[in-house]
Length: 472
Image (cartoon, rainbow, N blue to C red; front, side):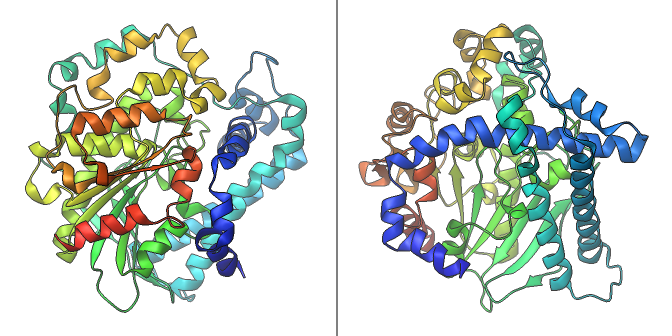
């Protein structure tokens, strides 16, 4: 039933009605005023459960300390002990199921249950764990939780910390000479795909300053080698592996014989979940620290995508493509700009950027998402101005005049004319700066979310990407 509904939404007439400008007009306020604040409460409850379990602290006091403040109401309402106990139970169920699956996949420990059963139990526990946000819906109506618990580093501190990289930005994005080996798990087989987990060894504990070791999910079409591999760089707060199935975009690629590699961005997914760093939800650290968070994200993730490209090429000997969406498009454009200094096997064969930009500071200060969650105000309060952010631009986006190593004919761009999150004009600016041919620009009358979610329903950019990969 779920698969039939998804098919209607993405490939049937319902999809043609859904992915229109009205979708963002409805969804954007929901994201900023409901989803992000409920995620903030969820993260505070997560910190409270960890504090009670590990230190015996009172969970209500720990929640109050972790949730953050809003200007309208200094201290959000604290959930009941029963609510926090219900949350802690769901959290523990997930952590136990995750540990059992990880042990079976990587440690080779014997478990009488098949891998598929362990994975199913973990996936179900993950969905319930993430869904515990709904426990705080009524209190959100009454108390208005903050969307983000900000801890923005001031401009002087950030500038001093990145001074050397500003003078030679290529240092920030070079591939490491020595890095922990990547380990691929056993396969979890289903009738739709083979699922693997990929990870590097290293300290599991993530903090606001350290994202923890690389992790990714690998999905391969069943019963045949992949014709190509596509790395998908996701958007902010996206944690696909935690929501009970993979997106229609992922399934669209798998149905066409393409393997999909889903890296988890710094401070997202398993990297966050294994860290328990101060009660943050997926991606919150990137926003909460202001420019320092973005710099940390890009300096970590850009080289990781190069490593994963080289790893994929070595393992399957097929073309490798890069698909970046929103924050992933900003990451992807840095990958393309700096890959010329990398080994040839670390460079993508073709790329699709969905909502890139040539003006990150405009996106940060004028984008509807950052304004809606209070990031613009937080930056102003911390002393940031567009000019101070622009002074760090080479660490956020390709420098002026810096062209990608990949030929413009092999770079595709999708833009939404109604995009208020990453302003449409800045995406056009990226196309112009890089000389992206008009036939490689896919411009739709859509907003930010409808553009990316609607790709399988209007798949011309995806079909063009696969055509480029097939031609090597």
